[in-house]
Length: 221
Length: 393
Image (cartoon, rainbow over the protein chains, first blue to last red):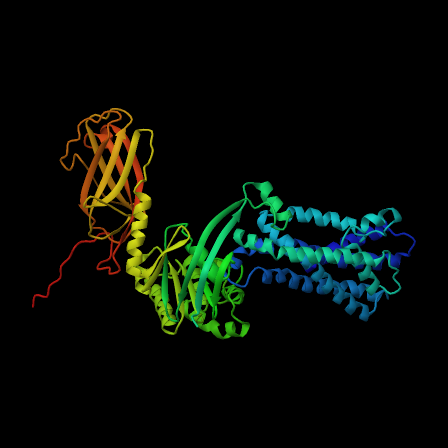
C-alpha cells in the first residue's frame, strides 16, 4: 500500500507539475502545495475505504468474541498511521532537499495527520456500521472519495468562485491547516472557524452510530 | 457470588420488510425503518454455579444460539439483567476467522488476541497449543496447506489453551478423529473439575447427557423446563412429537398423505431409542384409482445408504385396489435394530412386487428421525443387534 501511495503521488506530481496548474505562486511553491495535498489525502482515502469495510470483512471474528466491533475499527487506523508515516518520509525528504520544509514541520505535520485520522474515525464508526446493514457500500464510498478528492483543493489553488463550494467539503479546512503547519510562509486560503461545524457534525454522527444503530448492527452481523 | 446469573432476559431481532426500510434505518441511525421484530428470547432467568455443566436443548430456532451469544457478549439483551463473573470463551464455528494466507502461528496470535489472550500469554501458550493440536513443526506453514480437520484442531486447541470461567460450546466440542475427540472431552472435563461453568448446546443427546446433569429446554424463546438432563430430554422428545404429529405432506399423486411414528397406539416423537419396538403409520388417499397396490417403506442413513426396506407384498399383506379419494391407514410394526444416528424414511406405492411393474408414487426422505442410544451406547456400527453376554466358566 505504501508503494501504491508513493506511485500515486509520483504520477499526480509528474502530471500536474508538467501541466503546472499554478496560480500566482512560483513553481517551487506549487511543488510543496501539491505534495502536501497528496500526502494529506491519499492515506486518508485509503483509511476511508478500508475502514468502511472492516466490520463486514471481520464479521465472523466479531460474532465469536465479546470484544465488540469497535476494536476492529482501530485496525485500519493503525495501518493508516504506518502508511502515512512511511509515505511521508520520501515526500518530506524531497521537500527538505528543496528547502521547503523543516524537520520540525515534518514532526508537527505527522502529528497533525494522526489527528486527521481520528477525525475521520468519527465518521467511520457510522460508515462501517451501515456497510453491514446495506450489505456493501464500498463502491459508493470509492465514488464519494473520488468526488471528495476533486472537491478538496489538493491539486489546484482554490479560486474565488470555487471557494464556497470547497468549504462544503469537511476536508478542505483540515488540508489548509495541514499545509499551514508544514509549509513555512504558507498563507491560509480559508477561514478556519468553519471546521467546528464539521467537528460537531462528525461527533454527533459518532455518538448516534454507537447508540441505537449499534444494537441493530449486532443483529445483522 | 454465582459466576453466571440471568434475570428476566429478553431479546428481539430487528429486521426490514424491504430495501427502502433498510436504507431508511441506515440514514436515520436506526431510529426509523425497522418494521420487523422477531422475539427470540423472552423472560429467561437462570443461574449457574462453579463447575456446573448445563445443557441447552431445543428445536432449531428455539433461541439456543441467541442465548449463547448474549452470554458470550456478542449480542446485547433488550431487557433484563445479565451478570457474569470472570471471562467467557465461546466455541462457535472453530474454523471461522482464520486467514488461509497467514501461517498457523500468525493465525494463532491474531485469533488469540481476539479471544482475549494477551501477547505474553500467547507467547507462553504457543508450544502447548501446537502440541495439543498435534501440529508441532507446522507453526510457520500457511493455513491454506492444512486440511479442514487440522484447522479445527488448531481452533479448538487455541480456544481451550487457558481455562475460562465460563465456556460456551455450540456443537463444536468434538473435533478430529476419535483419539483427538477423547483429548477434547478430557480437556473440557478437567476445566469442569477446576470450576469452569459449561454451557453446552448440542443435538447429540448422548454427549449432552455425558457432560450435563442439568439441562434447560428452550421452546419458542422461553424456558420450558430447567431440570435434570433426563427429564429435559424426555420433555424435548414430547415437544418434537407435538410439532410433527400434524406433519401432513402434499403431493399431486395423493390427496392426503401423512407418516408418523407411534408406540402402542400413542404418538411418538422423532427421537427414538435403539431396539425400541415402533409402529410406522402411513395414512394416504390416492388422487386416482390404484389397482393391485403394494405399499413399501425404506430407511436410509444420513449418508443415503439404504439400511432396510420392505413392502406389503413381501410381508404377505394384500392391499387390493384403493379407489380415488379413498382413505387408508397402514401400520408397520418393527423393532429398531439400528445404531445411533440420523435416518430418513421413504415410502413407495406401486403395483405388484416392485415399482418396475407400475409405479404410483415414490418418495425419498419423506420423514426424518434420530436414534439415540439413551446415554449408554452398548454397541457401535450401523446395526444394533441385541446381544447377551454370559460367562460360561
